[in-house]
Length: 253
Image (tube, rainbow, N blue to C red; front, top):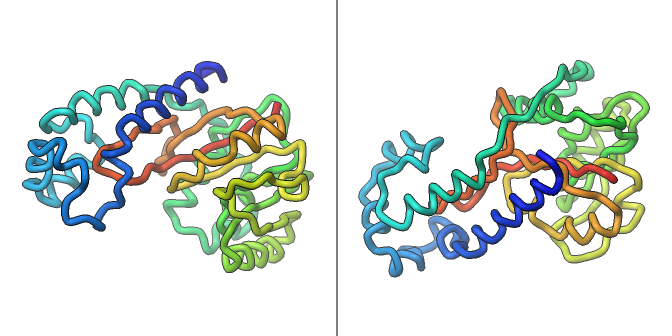
């Protein structure tokens, strides 16, 4: 998908999510009655009558639910906005010895799928792991001759990540930074040129990265969601969920 097509797609997704944010923004399990239930009483009643087994059975195919309006219309629109092809993959370089220690199995599979889907005309010289946690993604992408900077807001994760990077004797710098804060990042935090990458299960890929990207001449390359075996663009909003799996890579100009 060309960059201009990606921008148009995500502009449409942004508009869709903003228009219907009343359905997905309220935090689950914090209300006896969700605010949108007064507007769509038939849909609310239908959902409340469903069992946990019903929910589990359609977990991966919510757009097929025979739910009352406006769910079918919204699900169809969401399905159209998220209809993109699976990304091509390549053979990933073997991981360093014991690099996957302390990484949950499913997360490691996601990281492997993410790395296999990356294909660059020019090999990156410096990776930027955005919202890095302990930096598992960045360390897996890091190859000889490259450097890595990890941005994370949790001091405990920074300390653990730096210890892991030092243990593997890798050229990694872990820095304290809240990537959701509306602040300008300095060259110290975002070395240029660099290749930012992130695997996120929250909203941090919708963040102040655009002004930051503008300042540092980055452009969005692809936003994806991952499974253990494949990686493909999948930014599907679900009205009955309050989160989405996203993997994102930003490409330098």
